Image (cartoon, helix red, strand yellow):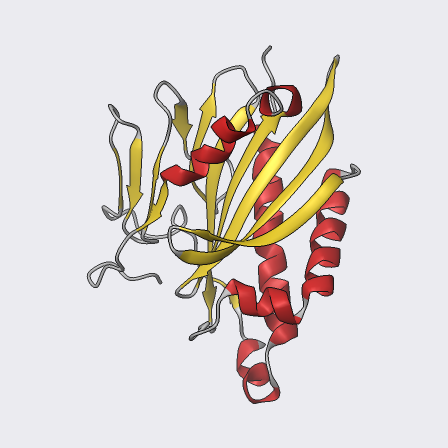
Length: 229
């Protein structure tokens, strides 16, 4: 089946990142509130300079980004592109299956996390966090979300939040349930969202196969020669 679903997948992962920016402003203390009112999104990799900051090995499908210090090993024979959002740095998909995995990064200007992680914000404002995410996602997709859940995890030794939910995908004469898994975390002054979508009937057959795709994500040592904007 030929499924045109990519734009919606990018929108969903991007909405997670936008919520992060919203919650950062909500959770700052009095001493830093005035400074953090200046928070805004920096120019994305696609909007910035075209220096050599990334590399894709066409044989192994290992992608490395030296600006945002993240790498991912895609499965063999997947299709690789840059996505349609300015914040998608790489996206892989299995042809004509509805399966895709994308990395989105937003750099926040005027804000440093310091020694805080995404767990700190999540624990302080768990209810707001959940409510805002579900609200924005439902508004963006105009669809009801099912089985929404979140938990604290690690991704490449960094504290992250894992989100799982499903929705009903409709395109022309097709209608089926789509499973989404999103890992979200902070690294330096950037927010990252690694998002997977898989038709539920495929995911249900072998959940471990698709969950293990996140094992291919790794964070690189921060470069001193290539800094974010």
